[in-house]
Length: 73
Image (cartoon, rainbow, N blue to C red):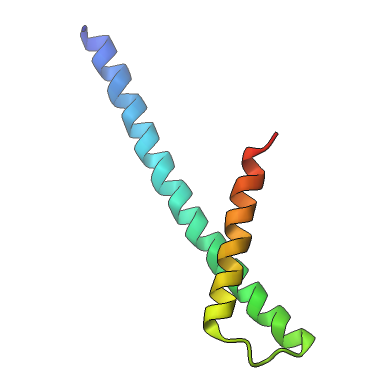
């Protein structure tokens, strides 16, 4: 293994680590935005007594479905 191959492997590992962290951060932001949208929408429809557990479950299902759907081509 030459120096060029080591640099290329190091670059690939760095890009993979940075993109993984970025995807996790964006996933958390998307989850938080979904949670706010669900709570506001439930209030507009008249379900003002939506529990936190129900809202979090709904946001989690929405986020998971979005991730699964984005993998489909």
